[in-house]
Image (cartoon, rainbow, N blue to C red; front, side, top):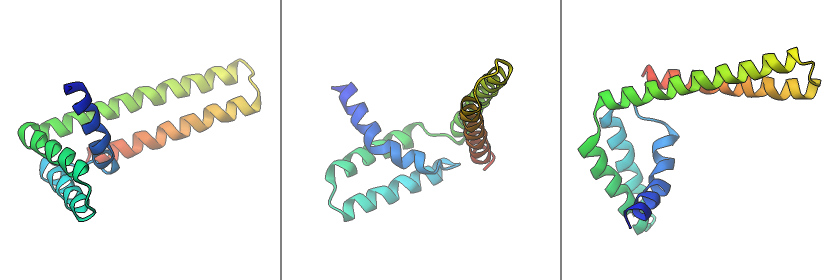
Length: 125
């Protein structure tokens, strides 16, 4: 039952928390409270319940330091992803892959680079 509740909570709350990561616990709290108000205004009782649970857990566990730490972990993962994509691109060029395959790998590098920049901007807020 806990697993199901956690899964459902993730489905309900994940879009809220991922849309624009707040840089402080106060900002995160405000974001969740706005979503609660929106869900209440639209009569979505299940979403309200899930968000209220998320708010309670956030109030109990959130620290600005933990948010900074998580942001840094995301940046580190994105750096690793970018390095792997760049290596794949170098290998494709070295192996004489087709222009289409090289272009596909270049798009992956560009996407990984954009994601890294986004996460670095978030982490610096």
